Image (cartoon, rainbow, N blue to C red; front, side, top):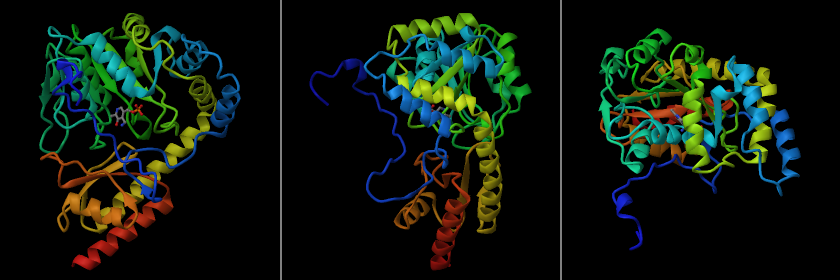
Amino acid sequence: MSRFFSDRHKSLVPYTPGEQPTGRQYIKLNTNESPFPPSPRAVAYAAEAAKRLELYPDPTCGELHAAFAKQCGVEPDEVLMTNGSDEILCFAFNAFCDDRHPAAFADVTYGFYSVFAQLLHIPYTLIPLREDFTIEPEDYVALGKTIFLANPNAPTGIALPLDAVERIVRGNPNNVVVVDEAYVDFGGESAVPLIHKYENLLVTQTFSKSRSLAGGRLGCGIGCKALIADLNTIKYSTNPYNINRMTMAAGLGALEDDAYMRDNCKEIIETRGATMQALRKLGFTVIDSSANFVFAKADWIGGNDLYLQLKERGVLIRHFETPRLKDYNRITIGTRDQMRALILAINDIREALL
Ligand code: PMP
């Protein structure tokens, strides 16, 4: 830390992203990326857009907003595209939280929420999940706080049914409820249709997972016009050109190639089922997942041990050291071949131990 670092941030503990190795080639199952390349149309559009990089991108993101809104069944001024969904989440903390509107989220959820709250000096409350990692919706009713709800949740993969989400949104009419749907395309029920019914609902989504654009950084918020206007105020006070030309073009190509996305999701869902079954056969407890990852623990090996031993064998998975999670690992669903290699590696580790 330099002697110039602001006192405001001296105790800030930043978010730790999953490893992005540059040397050895790993089977990379640690950051919930898609194992499939982006749609060829997304790549072609991005390549074309690269020819005009001397110009700033369209700050209104007009064409992409129109295309995305159409696909969601909402109006263009009910959406805002951002630099990954991390950015829309940061905008939401900025726009809808303060001392009078503290934040609330689960004790086990996406780790960035508490970092945004700390960065922006927003008080926050952690609401414990039940023993089985599910959410008790009644814990969130009439909270008087801005609620952040990942649905499906991370790192558990557990989805909350839409009627429970609606109960929470309806139960907090004077506070914004942000539903983070980063993984919704793998089996969750989207709350987007509810945005016309509830002015306090903001849904966030991402192109990083189901649309294979994690490296492009494209996310979005969907909510009533007034909420989106507030988020735009934050955007235009932070980084009006938040989405670069190539990403904007890639996003448009990905939206036009919806069938590609649907096919990939179907493949991931099938592979997830086979992986869960194989892991259970190897003595794992696997939580039923609605996301592109599974959360699993075994009684014959500790979470960190498994992570380290798999890494040695060239397979990267994600381990969290927090007390409630340390026995588990989060494993991204890759291709069928990648998952076969994972299961073989786990089998080897197990045979060497037993
Ligand atoms: N929400 C959740 C629950 C996530 O797991 C992630 C990915 N790490 C994000 C949001 C952010 O993803 P991105 O910024 O790539 O859209």
